[in-house]
Image 1 (tube, rainbow, N blue to C red):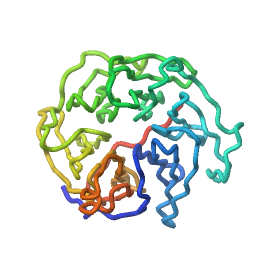
Image 2 (cartoon, one colour):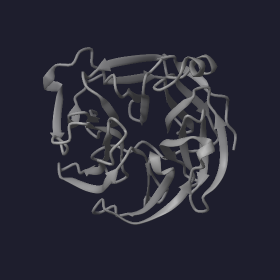
Image 3 (cartoon, rainbow, N blue to C red):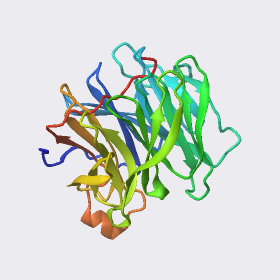
Image 4 (cartoon, rainbow, N blue to C red):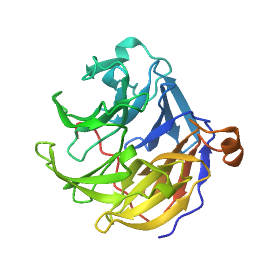
Length: 302
């Protein structure tokens, strides 16, 4: 496995940078700063990073088949309508259309990580914003608007990924320090037969966001671990540990024309003055060049 050193792309100083999602049609990256409600749109051609303030916590984003975006917000799942060029200089209320709010009665919860599956459904999880109660759930939204609850009793709903054959779904509830594997039904969007694929040792940090590659490996970001890790889910073995110059590494996604560029987000949340002195780039967006082909960011409705 050949990897370049991490390249700092945007020194955003994000408090809770998360959720990178590559738009292959537009060749750009979406990512979020969750608690500040910021949607970042990064264009690697010119290095510009446009920021849209959505006015409420924003957990996740994914491209949709119609050129718009689907979001997991504090107030539920919504579509953000972009202009013909894929930009948005302001945010008229008419351009943010809410589709579902399954937790309107859980005022302490918010959406966290989420992404689309190979079947065009949007899977997104919730969590207790105070990170105390196991009040979160994992939901699946179909393009026809129907919503299904896949899991309940979740503490911090985080990384999601699929196997290259799309038959296995991987999922992280961070405090468990485990990556679970489920059988995934492409027709119904259902999950079954949970089992532990990977156990993350405490010395490495907390498992956060995740992606997968065509070799079947899982790439897991480590909160508090200043690293990305690569795991073989068939054996549970650690394949590679990749240092990142940020203390809280939050998620990763493959992108680029050849789907071999790994974009990595990070956060400053919870860091002490000493941490920030040791890792001043925390909160930045990074990129690594690899010799690996990653699974794509799947599109809602496709």
